[in-house]
Length: 142
Image (cartoon, rainbow, N blue to C red; front, side, top):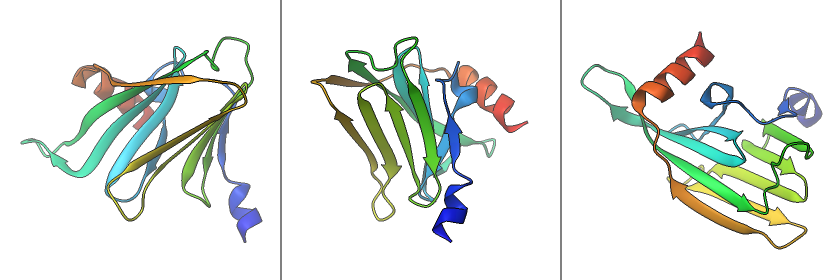
């Protein structure tokens, strides 16, 4: 059964242009859109109970992860996989492996980074206007 499910994993061999090329990930309460753009890993975060006055489910924030040295540099090997059996996203880029998942038992987003060489990680909130996100994600869903 496991082999059958793994054949349906979603695999990308290049980073995305923008949020319209994001992979979904979540635990039924917290949802993420995950993509690599301009050498950064981006996480757009949503929650099932975050609604506005127009009954629109809102995105709550964006997190930007920057790695130095840059494993996503042009020409570097890249593979992003939505692994259905384990419910996570694995990104392999050059000497770096990133594993990302939303904890099933706690409202926690987990991020692991492994590298065969020393690496520095900077995590920050990023500015993404509602219009940019809505436009990018509505393109994905239509």
